[in-house]
Length: 114
Image (cartoon, rainbow, N blue to C red; front, side, top):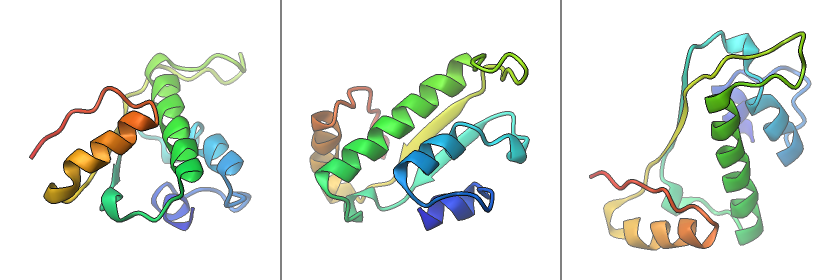
């Protein structure tokens, strides 16, 4: 949570929990960016339990989808479609295992680059 807060310059009210991450990463108006690329390094070394991994994957998938189509749930503050991409860094020997883990969490659209 601290790394996300630092990288995205989350506001002081960020609560350092999954709900707060979901809320803040789907806003980001303070960045003023026309696109976003989130790069997570050493994903294969991340010590997340299966439940936490599933929550993170769900948040990132939903975020990318929301950003790609824009948001109009608040008519006063619509947001246009904005590219939001997630890159996952994994050490070469662990690519297969990590892709399998992502598949088990419902992520099917994984492109592997070396």
